Image 1 (cartoon, helix red, strand yellow):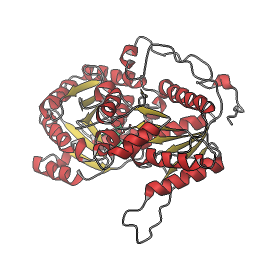
Image 2 (cartoon, protein in one colour):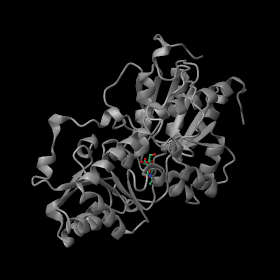
Image 3 (cartoon, rainbow, N blue to C red):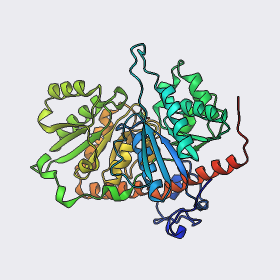
Image 4 (cartoon, rainbow, N blue to C red):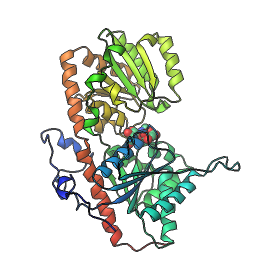
Length: 431
Ligand code: GMT
């Protein structure tokens, strides 16, 4: 049963209001295939929904997007229940509409591999039943989609119907999911989802190319809340990191091999041979040690700061001049979008969905994966000319606004509404 909110529907962005573009002259065409079409978006009737969001709570982009989505929905009056094994890192302070349900897996000695998926399914059954959820939205297919399907079937056997939406984020499709040991379960769970979204056109295509998917996949891109990226004038750390006015180059990632951290260090070496510059590396992961060793052997350590994981990467982005993302694979590249929202141009590879986010020659530059010469050249082209850099900084911000919450959230709400409308016509399925 969906409820009306206790506040004025007309004051919320998705109350039967056409969403208007603040900058209609800017790149709306580029959103074809990324966001959808030119048709003005009419959001559905405003009803309060009770939504369960299943996510990875760590620093990865899928967790960040899922958390921000939940927070935005809660701000609009919807009731949002996060379900995960840990409190999402970007959750911040609670509001009355936000809830967190922890999934605790027993450490019974027999379990060499704790059965997270089974316990998650059980927790979903419990939360759906007792919180009377309207729908589940799972982020990252493995193992969330199959756990949601299992929960859906358990509930159906009790006469309770719960639809679930799966959002594909990247390596669940492009890397891990393709492993033959995962693929059958992933394909099945995607096909059993009540709706499926992918964060880029590239990921959508990859999914159809590599899995026998029978359902439509809607592209709903990742988003930012522009207000999160307004620099705090009291926190200008620029002088601490670049005391002599050096340019600041930043990279943020999980330091996994596919992020090609070595390329970041090598590109920086080429840049710093020409321009006084500092490199700030944010994040941590398996490649950190190699990157530190490479730095030592290239002699760039005194200009490089490995600062580890940060809850508020926007603080570093606020003092950055350029962002590097030379990834091997990247379904979207949320870190690049966050940099652009902070007015930081991006030099990235052209892998996956990156060209859908970073506009070559406008918000930064693209280069083939591994082409560190080209990336360093493009970086110097920007950093050597103050006027040019300033234009690219403004462009990066304008491009980021194409992915602002007010443009993307109505897409999710419209999808929820469609799924819930379809639900009214569905009888519980018991296999
Ligand atoms: O990279 C991953 O394996 C995990 C995943 C995550 O949780 O951060 O990253 C993917 O999802 C992000 C959010 O949609 C995207 O911005 C990243 O591009 C994507 N990573 C890859 O495709 C490598």
